[in-house]
Image (spheres, rainbow, N blue to C red):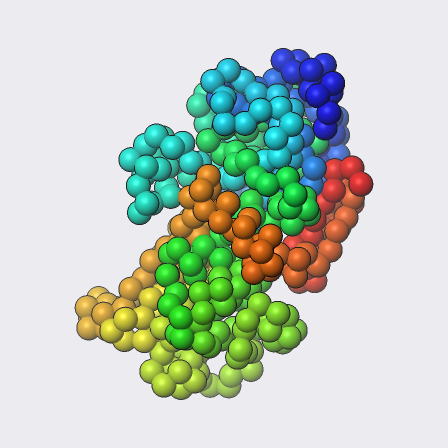
Length: 387
């Protein structure tokens, strides 16, 4: 985007197109919307491309709170800064940025600590407006409010995001790859690298080889894991997984009377060093925990089940086994520092991003991206605003 465009729109509302979810599970509708100028500590971004994450689909289907409609979904994206509000000093008009649903304010105890990526000032929650004032920057042509999604809302040609959720990136990275760093790939790679701290020469078991699970495999590969066991119901994931370092594959729909944990324990002579649950099922968390090695095994929850889902674990087993169970939110990554390390790994041809993109569509065909993901045909479908 050139400076002339920025100078003629800064401080003014912008009329553009957005894909709106008006009812749960119904196709998105592309409509003209009004995007307000950014307030204090806010950035208005022209979206170049966005990708569809399973979290978008989950909230699109949801009929009860925290679901809310009408809403502009989308949270994996890359764009160019169109204008900034007062108090924004990290980015300027024309910078290439990625929005990240997880805040990094750089001021609170958690953001200043290397031990946490869970911002205290802007805690993770499904906010429906801007976090500082709970109001929306989107209205439809009739003047009715459209709600925000995960502090991003990228299924629109322009969006407004708090600076705490904006990370400047290297503009030489292709847009259709950079957007993947906004959520899914970073989450999986980070879960292996930052949360579990996978050690070289170890054994990893990954329950679910969707995009997140494959990103965990990629992270484990980068960490030097000797054996990476992928578990999925889709046999096609056996070959796909090999691209990301998966060395062994278990089709969980074809294991007879045995449990997954029995299979993994037999394969690994006592259990995997690290187990990752990447589907979002509490039953799989239990199996993952049972599959990891006593004494030092780590089980990491990466998938998200419904808010009321409860785990049931034996207190005796927890005490006796000496194993760890932990959660990993955005892979434990700090958005404004760790993303740059992933950028470098990609530019140095160490981190794989290209292999995650299985489909690309134009904005007008955004519902096709949903169909592909629901049919299990895509890992990541990139959606171009204008191609």
